Amino acid sequence: MITADLDPDTSRWRPARVLDRWDETPRIATLRIGADRWPGHVAGQRVDVRLTAQDGYQANRAYSIASAPSSGVLDLAVERLDDGEVSPWLVDIARAGDELEVRGPVGGWFTWRPTDPGPLLMLAGGSGLVPLMAMAREAVAAATGTDVRLLVSTRTAAELPFAEELAMLDAAGSLRLLHTVTRGAPDGWDGWRGRMGSALAAELLDDLPSAPPAIFICGGSGFVDHASHLLMAEGVDARAIRTERFGPSS
Amino acid sequence: MPPVSRGFKGRRREGVDATRIPPGQHLVRDFPVLTYGPTPQVDTARWSFSLDGAVSAGRRWSWDEFQAMPREQVTTDIHCVTTWSKLDTTWSGVPVDAFFAGIEPGGGFVQAWCDGGYTTNLPLDDVLGGRAWVVDRYDGAPLAPAHGGPARLLVPHLYFWKSAKWVRGLTVTVQNEPGFWEENGYHDRGDPWREERYGAAFE
Image 1 (spheres, chains in turn purple, blue):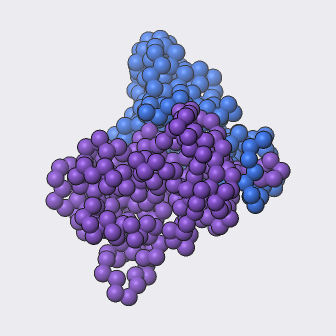
Image 2 (cartoon, chains in turn green, cyan):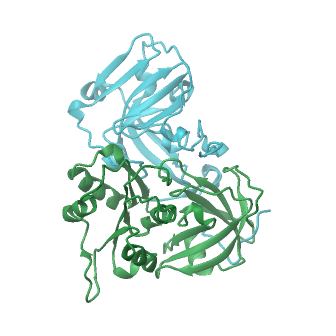
């Protein structure tokens, strides 16, 4: 449980439990975690999660935090990998009250704080949206007037996590969402279609108030390299691009 | 005893020598790519490898000179701080000792620097004595750009962020100066068998 007595040691395993869980997409679930004396996090960071079987066997994997630091909660959004060891338990089996351990938060590079200068540009491939969602939520909550733009590429429209929340934030003008669907756009789909191309890159960069000091790209390695090269072809400085890649590891 | 996660069974690998998997690591068959920025495209015609800093005399090798140096085949296990390990990876390259032949270091540390701006720091002892290489071939083929090609450092006894991709030189230093990940939350040395993953704080 979260208490006022915080422990800043990020290198130890903390006892934790699932407080709640809900589906985001058919393959992605959010788990709200209560961790012993959790010290808080920075948007973009991840945690290591460790599970222990009845006989003492353990396995651990890293998952990005989806919640804004200012929300005071620790939400992980996890995609189920069919050949995975930890993610199937988190997505399909875990429910409120279940016990696990967490370590972290981890990461000091792929992070964003409301005091960082804008504009805030983010590009996600599929579940690569998760750490960027923490940044988007933090930026919206801080309401500093930062120009927030989020490009997301998913295979199908239904695979966009946080879809309702993002649509609301987009409609309210809190951020600008550019969603492209690479296969099987539904009837009546009026968004972008196909793999991200130069037109979508140009749209993301259109009429920026200033050059973004950092652009965050997260997804599979293929998406990250493709998106990086498109942005560089549009004149973005490679040094401004920060990436986090999801390996095929499970 | 840590809390049991209800219903978790795990996936135990048959035929894996557990003594080769450091604590908190899991075995992968694929080769994940993890990099903090875009993949640099490096032209070997303009590539060089430098040894400089606190040394008796600095030196620089062109790609062709690097290719002409005696090389070694290395088969080794690698361990990434993000918890994957891969066994029996095969590499080919030049031992770091060969670059130091005839050059006297005047400090106990090195800073590896790379195309794309990456740096990582290592005690000199961790890159000498047949424990580190500059490699340009993986699994019998030229090293792919995503994995650090044309050439990367290979320091397999430490977590793999120390095996700097797109390496262009080593700078010998008197003081230990943290590199990129060492300044961004990772441990200074990174011994996987001691599980030296993270630094004390991330602020």
